[in-house]
Image 1 (cartoon, rainbow, N blue to C red):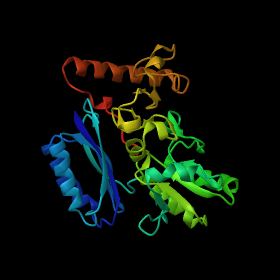
Image 2: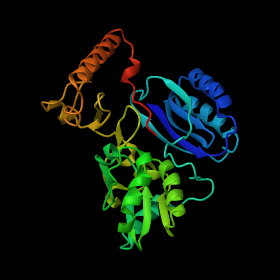
Image 3: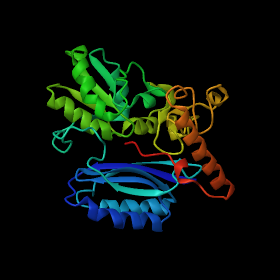
Image 4: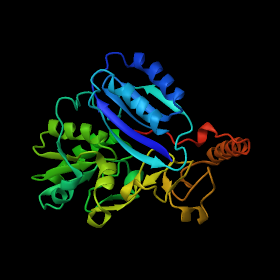
Amino acid sequence: MLTVCALYHFTRFPDPDALRAPLLDLCRAHKITGTLLLAREGINGTIAGPRDGIDAVLDHVRALPGCADIGWKLSTASERPFARMKVRVKREIVTMGQPDVDPLARVGHHVDPGDWNALIRSPDVAVIDTRNAYETAIGTFNGAVDPGTGSFRDFPAWWEANKERFHNKRIAMFCTGGIRCEKSTNYLLSQGVPEVYHLKGGILKYLEDVPEEDSEWRGACFVFDGRVSVEHGLREGPHDLCHACRRPILPGDRARPEFEAGVACHHCADETSDEDKARFRERQRQIALARARGERHLHADVPDDF
């Protein structure tokens, strides 16, 4: 079994470019794969590999400026969930596109997983899922509002169009690991919402800590790695990934007439042109050739989409 580590931390990196090469070299030396994002606002990512290698990377990250108290979440995977290691420098470690949002200034009240059920069951609380529509489609909390957004940067516009729905409500927000809520709660506070809460550690920590029989979660949680989804206890979920549109599908969806491996599924068959499908078929052919050689084609990897 391989160890999967999801981590993020907001801090000030004056020169994130200078941090990239040493971190990438260390990950490669320890046979770690995955994606780490660096920006002036901090670090975010998910990596996988042998436990001693994960520990070495965490030791290195904790020594970075302002990262001594970084948190992380560990789970396991039966197969390597990433094909390669990427360390990228970006404008944001989670893209919201709101330059005035600053999670280091203030965020919503953190709510431990053990206290989350009582909060979201309160009649004066509106629960908002901050994830993308393809994530919410396979699982969410009972009663949660789904904004139906295609990306996190769509959230501010959705809020502006819908804020009157939540007048006189306390707002409870959640996401996969907690990072999107650091920004979304700061944003709502800046918009004058007086009481904003978010799930500490995100869905992953809830699924790890809260017994299934006591859970308000329904379905599976999409994750940005080769496992595609996880369920209670962070056990691997049932979903596959359509490598054409990158949406999660169930094994039974492969029997639908729209499905063609790597080319289309029932979600996207009508969204792409014949030229797109021809290109996807060629990519799938190259993946099959790589597999026959005992290799893993880079395009078979799950992309980062934090």
